[in-house]
Amino acid sequence: MVYDWIVIGNGIAGAAASYELAHLGLSVLLVERHEHLQGATRHSYGSIPHWAATTPIQQQLCEEGMARYRQFSDELGMDTTFREQDLLLTVPVDANPEAIAQSFSPCLISPQLISQDTACEMEPLLNPEAIAAALTIRHGHVNPEKMVQAYNHGFQNAGGKLHIDQVTALKQKGDRVIGITTTTDSFHCDNVLVCTGGWTRHFLNFWGIPVEQYFTHSESIECPNPGIQLNTFVMSAITLRFALETNASRPEHQTSWNSPGLEIMPPVLDAGALQFSDGQIRMGQISRVLTDPSAVIDADQSETNIRTQVSTLLPCLKTVVGHWHHCLVAFSRDNLPLIGPLQPLQGLYLFSGFHHPFVFVPPLAQRFAAHVSGPPDPFIQQMNPHRFSPESI
Image (cartoon, rainbow, N blue to C red):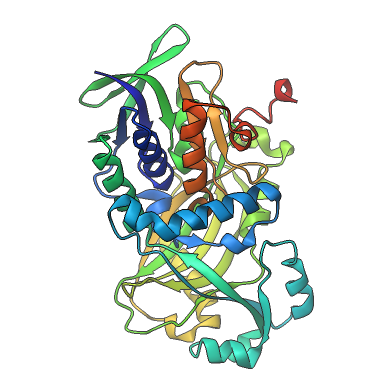
């Protein structure tokens, strides 16, 4: 059989893209090397900051995405656990609350500045001595595993096929990709879509295809049975990770990314904690820029650092039993994902590098499927993976 599309990777990007392609009546094979969900999707918060869009494109996509989330369970035939909850963005004691609040003014919906006392009323487990104030807003959330399972359910109901195996080679005929080889089989197709998240740069470089996508090593702690109840999602109003990504992808660092074993920037820690609807708590996170995707992290030291910072805000989490995890998180130079054909090969596409994947993947997966099946989509055209190359300027 020759599939219309083979999608590599069953994180949130691959699960969404494969579903949308199959939903249009195309024959799709989804290939994932792990039987159980792994990687950045598995260990993410499942956060949907639909309010945080700052550009017209982002605002349009956020509105489309939220409309999808509100009806996804019915469409996919499975509960996605979508909900909205109160988010508390804590302001450090040495920061100016009004200035912090003003920094959110470009957002589609600006969070409301509240006092220290009001913040502690909303979240009684918060340490009042650790904050000067907070901002609050309603915030979307899904369980990442449940969301992928729901996409897979809809995908298979639409005729899609899921194959668990590791891709070992791209099959080519001249400059056209005509399929893939796995450890146990080979498959033919008209098009291959790469949705391998933080491993994308390594995966494509192995096949001699350069791409300006980057990754951080993300570290967090999962507490399956914490025995406590958080009323809100707590995180810092000053997020260091996005500045780290911007600095690490500057042109002067491009050669460093091709040299294994380097640490391009010092790590950062954004303290936060979220409780899922099933009771588990996820807290973190450290973001580390190491050029080796298989770099070894000191798990004990990382866990100590996370617990120290998070327990400053939420002392109850200092000693709660949990398990440390590490994964790769993809990002691009301009906060837009990389979506489209990968030159110079024909029939090879990329769908990766999402700034806020649970916000932007659903609407962009739908747009991508329509784009490759019909009229060009102006948003997808702006996200061409080669837009940073001199030839595209």
